[in-house]
Image (tube, rainbow, N blue to C red; front, side, top):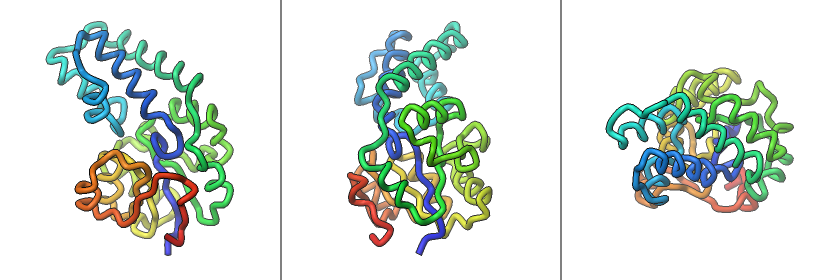
Length: 213
C-alpha cells in the first residue's frame, strides 16, 4: 500500500514537545510576557525555532533586546532539558526494529538539535544522516509542504505513495498538502481539524501502530 514511512520527530519519535515549550515559557517570562502554558502550547507547538521566535517577537510587539544572547540562552536551556530529560516515545523502538518499508525522519528541528534528540534517546542507530531531513538542511519548514516533497524526492520516492506520521497543526498541514497519506499520533489538534485534514487514522500508543490499519 505504501512505499515508505516518514516520521515527524518532536511529539512522534521523541517526547520533546513539553520540554521545548518549557524553554519557550521561560523565554517569554524573561521578556515579561504573561503567557500561560496553555497559550504557549496552542501557539507554538510544531513550529520551527525561527517561526517560534518570530511569533514570540510579534507578541512582544517590538524588537527583542540583546537578541543573540536571548536566542543563545533559550538554546542552551532547551538543550540542557533535552540532554537530561528527553525520552523516546514508548514503544517506538519496537516499531522501528520491525519496520519492513524504507523510512526517514522529517522535522522542523535544526540539524544539531535533531542530532541531540536522536543520540540522547538512542534512536540515532535507526536514522543515519541520509535518513534525516531537518528544516535547516532542507531550507524549508512545516507548514510548507515542500519539506515533505523534497524529502521524498531525496529518497527517490513519490510523496503521494508515502505514509506520514504527524501530530501538530503545522506538520499535518505540510504532510496533507504534500499529498501524502497522513496518520495522526497523539494529535495536538481537534477532531474537527483532523476531519478537515482528511486524516483517516489516529492512534495514541505505538503498540497500536500497524501498516495493515
